[in-house]
Amino acid sequence: MSPQLQSMLQQAKQAFQSGNFDGAELMLKRVLQVDSKNLSALHILGLIKASQSRFKEATDYLAKAAKIAPNDATLQYNLAKALSDSGNNKEALSHHKKAVGLAPNNPEAWLNYGKTASDLRRYDEAIAHYDQALTLKPDYAEAWSNKGATLHELQRYDEAIAHYDKALTLKPDLAVAWFNKGVT
Image (cartoon, rainbow, N blue to C red; front, side, top):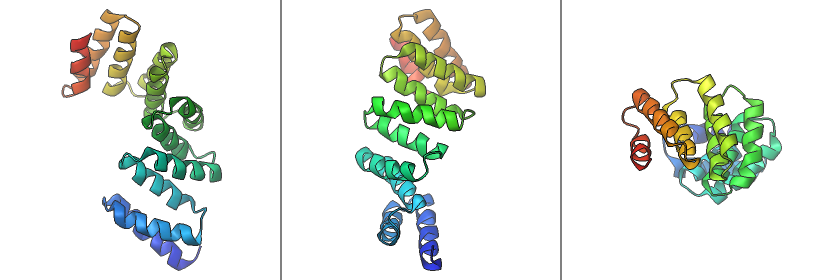
């Protein structure tokens, strides 16, 4: 990569990190005009689009990046999350599986895998994924809360409430846990 392209990519990363998404996007698209398979540019553009809730565009960029680097756990995680956020949970499952296979010690990856499984009403799988997240990070309030929501779906209400209570002990301002506990 030329020094000029490298400099532009670095400036785009800095713009992205500082929240200047429009500036970052402009520079990243210039990088892609010269190097259409620039992994960093594709990945960051995917993250920008996801942060703007433009999930179709996000998945397009992230899928291109994942084809270039299929064994990049972060890319697989981000692609799976964007697919799930866009409502494409069935397609997201394979990327979640790959993400946790590549980075099995990432509790966030297990949490999101669980969310997708739960959205697909694969509740036993979801519980197993939340349990894995909790094994890695026992104080993970969101995982306790999400497991509670899945237990609620299974009509295991006492267990669900106990999980919400654990989540709220860890994070008293977790609004979704309060709401779900009230519903349960």
